[in-house]
Length: 260
Image: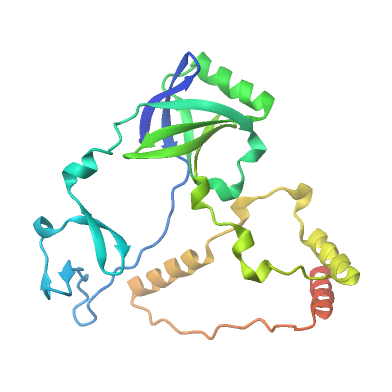
């Protein structure tokens, strides 16, 4: 059974709902280690001061924030303790918004939300009420010594807690110079693009994630198996996809390939 990363309660006006949070995603990456090529020993990174030209022990390290080139405001641990957040054991709901207001750009991380006890009526009451009104709850939560802006949404037979980015963290797309000018699209090009999209669309427009695999991970696992068996790995040339400069021609060729 997975371990809960947070235990506390939802404060819904005067209603208190005991909950637990579980990670909704488990990354399964394969991480390489840096090794010394002569003896294959893992490399250790040292804390080195280029000014004093020596390795620095933890007892001589302080925290600082840069305010101009090579100049820093230094903070003691006691000073940082004055702004440390107290451990929070509740999620205070401040408002409800339409569920479609939670855009993908806002999402940082997700957790499954479950009641602390089975058949917790208040939990399922809130879950069903939000589902019927198509609303998401907005609030704040202290998790791992950091205050997070969060959204709470009904999800299947439970709920989903979404850690949101703050507004100041999101960059304005209007700042990108590549999008400054509107490009005129020809009617023929658009018609072919729409036809190609329709040909490549899944049935009923539904996403089936299970049919997609991490091909890099799968190939890496095959390489690991070969290494374990002592087999020699043959280096293959990577096939390049030819680029068609004529957009209209490229769309027509793409449609032909899809129809085959």
